[in-house]
Image (spheres, rainbow, N blue to C red):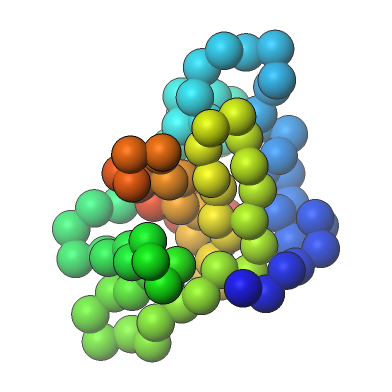
Length: 96
């Protein structure tokens, strides 16, 4: 995985507060201007390869990774953020 500087995350880390017990998704939903809008449908995340793909587009690899409590946050090109839970479930949102 490429490791981008923390600046690649932009304001995203500022939406997470350690003293707030809620998961990242809920904090993003409240504090990010567009809220957390999970993009389901044909978007696919491969947890083993750590890739994000959309039919017809090139496969994306994460630029950076951040741990928030027991969640893994992955930053992909085009402002895609994926939150991966310990059970392997995930959600993706474009946070630009």
